[in-house]
Image (cartoon, rainbow over all chains, first blue to last red; front, top):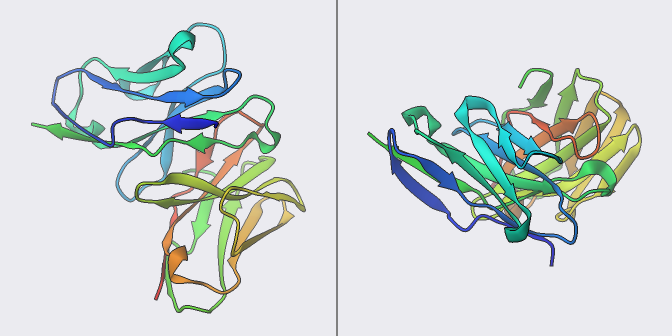
Length: 115
Length: 112
């Protein structure tokens, strides 16, 4: 079945430490790939997206993500986490050619940052 | 986010009453979407629109209807609200299919 999986429901990292959030998808063809961030009580903000080309994608707020076709993964990384990065992070995919450009979201990973 | 607003931001309603949520955009984007967000489920698509008067169902459309009579407005109606529809509802817009969304700030709906 087509799906998007974020294996980690909750992650805690220390401020200044590196971060990697995992995302795996299951689709026949590589979909469009996205990462969104949601601060408490807010809507979702687009961090970065992958359509094609270079498999390492740079986004806003110092985030990057790497697309690995062989692993059907699109993991989000940040070299040094700041306390303001505490939020919920969603991976999303848009199957290519789907009518309406619908996004399918993972269940989200909540990030806590320790001082 | 700039260019997309949802109203109301918060609403408490009684079981069995009709409720309409409004999404308004000033970006002239073709695509508009309604999602609901619930703990443990991420965001799930309720309905979407790909043009004026063109709408289609998402994965959790039962109990909801939508209308889009103008490019800028996309209405979500709960015909007879139930407690299972207590949720946070997000509207999103996109200028083209697969481009990615801009989200509104959400409407927190409580059905008592």
